[in-house]
Amino acid sequence: MSPDAGAGARMHALVRELYPLPRSITGDAVRQTLARAGEIVPLAVSEVPSGTPVLDWTVPEEWNLRGAWIDGPDGTRVVDARDHALHVLGYSVPFRGRLTRDELDEHLYSLPDAPELIPYRTSYYAPRWGFCLPDRVRRALPDGEYDVVMDTSLGPGHLTLGEVVVPGATEDEILISCHVCHPALANDNLASLAVALEAARALADRPTSLTYRFVFAPGTIGAITWLA
Image: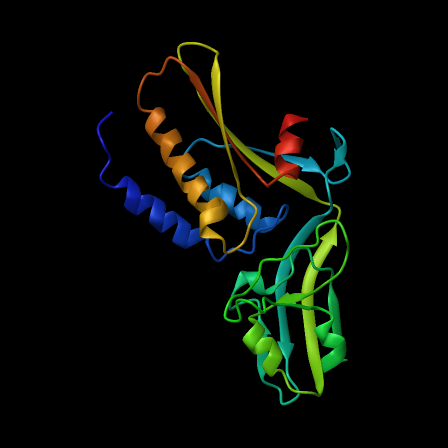
């Protein structure tokens, strides 16, 4: 198989395109990601309802983010999920309210040792809400009251999986899986998604002795659900 000079550019462009989506282990952003993958390879997408037993786990409720922000005492918006998907604690439950600085701080996450970075935090199985922000910004928040909006939904839905099989001369398989769940983390799952899709595309154009199965699923619970 000769090298494809355009493969690197295609993979980089795909990562840039999908990077802003607020993915999680369930939800519309995962569906959008898999829909885009389906434009590259003939992806079979399946959905498993919330509450379905999968091995010794259970498919969780579906989570979606519509918007989230914090407005300071003077009305200045200090955090906005539209600026960066990592600003929201993953799987945050809905919340709207007005909080004092001390009350708000109980729902903030930052990295004192890396004051310019936004941490990645989730709360899949312990219902709560929160925001992640640079520690420099967190420490500069003045006293006063803050208007907080966490516009999310959490309820019965589905977990979404994608799969493509490239048949070979035998039924012996090589399984390649990658995550499609994390937001704004290019090196965690978007890079592997892009590489796996490019590999599936390339393998489909050549005869192989082995069959190749590519699975695109949310981390941990997605793999467990696929195995179940």
